[in-house]
Image (tube, rainbow, N blue to C red; front, side, top):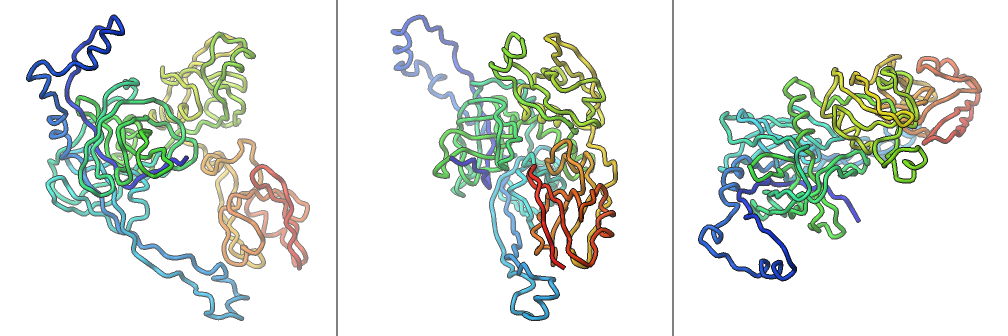
Amino acid sequence: MRVIPFLLLGLLMACSTTPEISVKTATSINAIAKEVPQSKSQITLSFAPLVKQAAPAVVTIYTKTTVESRQSPFAGDPFFERFFGDFFPKKGRKRIENSLGSGVIVDPSGVIVSNYHVVRGADEITVALNDRRELRAQVIFSDKESDLSVLKIDGPGDLPFLELRDSDTLEVGDLVLAIGNPFGVGQTVTSGIISALARPGGPNDQGRGYFIQTDAAINPGNSGGALLDMSGKLVGVNTAIVSRSGGSNGIGFAIPANLVAQAIESAGRGLTMLERPWLGLRGQAVSGELAEALGITRPRGVLIDQLHAESYFAKAGLSSGDILVLVDDDPVNTMSELRFRVATIGTGRMAPVAFLRDGREQSVSVRLDRAPEEPPRDQVTLDGRLAGLTLSNINPAVIDERGLSLNASGVLVSSVSGPAQRTGLRAGDILRGVNGKDVTRSRNVAPLITGGSVVLNVERAGRLGTIRLGS
């Protein structure tokens, strides 16, 4: 079973009310199910007015991307270049890739929200409006982890747009509509309901998402479009489906509008990606078994397993063993939900946090901000025997970006190129020692590499190992 992001999603909307029905017996249920419309108003109930209102704010996005095939792994290596010359191409061949996606106009000046994977790496972006005009656009904000991008059209203002709804007010069972261009057949409307809320996972396979689930049919060609409520407001941006075949199985995911709003606000402030507050903690959802062991009445919250000393939660007084239950008065029951909540609040702000300690609920205010860059990264690229090896100091910001252990120490291998590729080191490795001496700073490594053999102590995916380089 695959979670598949798609290159074009539509807008959702609906516009009618359902008559209230009182169900008393099984007989009445069957009677209602078979009842035909009794009046002209019942016969003419339709989503058409809502679709007519929303469709002009749905756009199609065409991208062109120059893709270069993989170059020789020996490019830049003096030994191979000397003996093999141009036998191995230094650069790969280039080709143009075209792709199709969707977007939603969220401001009359021409601000558009779409998926990151729709416009990723595009050299040229063209937006086709509902009235068939085609305009150039540029990406002004791009965030891979949330799979959101914000674009700006170079053209006229006063465009049709969709307002955002507070996605926290959604309930399972609410009606929604999706408008998109599945398989490139043209604009199509599908209807459904909110099937579930706060679903983890997502298109980046990081398990860090927090999505609205819907059974409104979503197919390849719909990514970046809108999920709309019955008032015509944007409740989410469609991004992926779960499917074995590649077609809709009735399990689609949309990014909640509250996170979309944060992306739009960030773009308006001139930021190019989402600034997420640093948690500086590791935790797990409280299961029924764990709740019983901890002596709490019901399973809820996130149990803190580990805290970094510089974490803002630690500085506010929380410690390992505490159970986070509320952030800004919203419940948090998984790490994905906790990340989502702090992301929608943003950086540089204080947020009330409720937690359980020894069975009693307590409250504190926690400053939400970016991970500290202390000590400075001090990125260094080595030459000589390890030419092409780039090293950085490990600090909270690096830990957060790379997903390292909170107690990570040593020097991070940021990238590996050229002759250094022959060492077996990989980007993301942690260099713990050289020739028996511990290393804690990037600039301390080069002086330890002498003319003889070199022994590198390396940590990879939590495991320690040794790499020996001959003289």
